[in-house]
Image 1: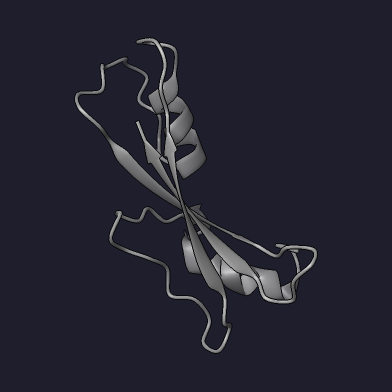
Image 2: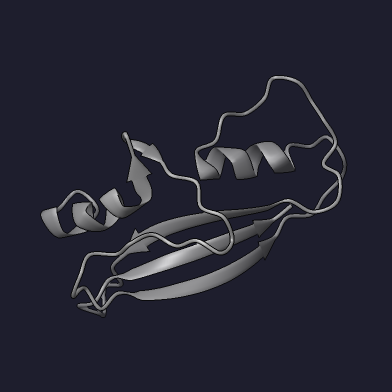
Length: 102
C-alpha cells in the first residue's frame, strides 16, 4: 500500500528529503486534506539492562543517526515516530503515532 499513489501521499507527510522527519511529542504531520485518516497513539516503554542497545534500536526505528560512542541515557528520552498504514478491513488509512519511552 505504501508504494501506491495514495500511500505515497501519506508517506510524504512524514518524510523530508527522502529521510524520516523527526517530530517532537507535541508535533504531528500535516495529513493530506480530506483524507479522514485517524491518528492512533501508542506509548511503548523500552526497558532492559544497561548497554544492550535500547537507545540504538529506537534511533534506528526513528531514522536518526546512531552515535558510534556509547553513552548512558539519563532519565527518560521520548522519541515519536509516525507510520501510515491501511488496515485490510478498512478503506480509510490510519496514522500510527508511536511514542518510544527509553
